[in-house]
Length: 235
Image (tube, rainbow, N blue to C red):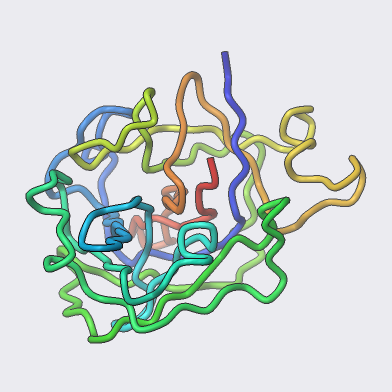
């Protein structure tokens, strides 16, 4: 069984060199020094976690996430956690996260279709960026970054039971174009109007967490390897 997921299409570049043998086996716990790093968004209403989502740092004071992770919620209860490998309740506490100041949603967001499901959060204080444990995700706009059929992509997964993993994990997916009927039903409106903010990726019994990044590995002409973010999970 291959499950198809729609992702918010977004091309970004993570400037961190990573060898192939540093990648964790898909769907199991990774090495604590794994790159690229992803951030965790927690919503702590009344001091208790209501939900978690994925996020990425794009400046020292701004975080990129999915709108459906924040819309309708008060920014004062949002905390962003950085440089984590273990996600136990002893670590994921509001006092351990960076508080949000406010968030801005994409002006063309459609909640019913999850179109343009992107939001930017402004943090109350800047994050210390060391490019080791915490690094910026850089937005790019390049025609060469267009996904090709069956490009391998990596996601930050949910557990099969939809419970939150307690350690950082990754899962391998395959980019799927609209020739897959299940993909076309997600990325097209009325089966013929293509929604350009969406792409699909699929994997056997695998899924990606809400707001979690979808990335692929690329190389520069000089051999430098990096990860390019191509989407954000909405599963």
